Image (cartoon, rainbow, N blue to C red; front, side, top):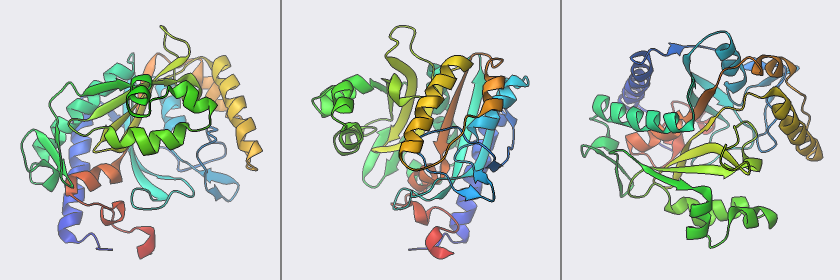
Amino acid sequence: MPELGLQGLKERSAFLTALRSFFLDRDYLEVDTPLRLPVLLPEAHIIPFASEGFWLHTSPELCMKRLLVRGCPRIFQICHCFRKEEKGRLHQEEFAMLEWYRTHADYGDLMRDCEALLAHLAEKLAELPGFKTPGRLSWQGHSLDLSPPWERLSVHEAFQRYAQVSPEEALERDQYEELLVERVEPHLGRERPTFLHDYPATLASLARKSPNNPDLAERFELYLCGLELANGFSELNDPAEQRTRFAAEIVAIESLGRQAAMPERFLEDLGRMPKAAGIALGLDRLFMLLAGFDDIRAAIPFPDEAL
């Protein structure tokens, strides 16, 4: 596995600087929150690391939403997160995450943020291999048109088009993840970036339901070159409904032999949180694309194997 040398470290530093400038120029407040928490947001599909009676956070989401309640209208954070049993060419158990949150916004606003962010990076990082052609992103033989608007494809449309089954049928057969990975994702973000949006509400425990269809949630994931880079949604701010959803997640977690608890302080604050939207973007994976690497371990200073 090649090491990230001096040139690569300089490119990664320029990448982080460009990210910060995008948000600071738009009046976002950069924040930092604890890495260790006594209680996490219960999510059955994510396995956390224990840390002396605490947990290493899997995302800064819990604390960042609580900061919105304190009156912060726009915040962002670049930090390291930890998720157990996620290792390979595209995953590391410790990884860099960018999250940003906006009050009085919804998931459509976040999609436009993503379009503007990539345009900003293309301007600031024109020397990186991924931006060798103006207005496009190139990676491993793929070339994407970055001009907005990007493709917006509903989960229902994507499953019908590429898996010839509805997402509801896939969930009933317990084949949703299998079909998503094997049949749907390879087609996403091939000619231009794709926003896969409007997820079944059962797959978005923290997202607001669509006012047009309560079976769907205002959630999206961003795909470039078949790779998922970001997960964003209109935030649920109803503490009673959130408690019900968390209770279901806790049951699922405990059925897997793991522990989880209700995040009571988060729920206390949630009722005072204004309408908002938030998104998490994997920085190591994005830098991997922009720097032209085909393995995330080549895009970070010290992958697990180098320690």
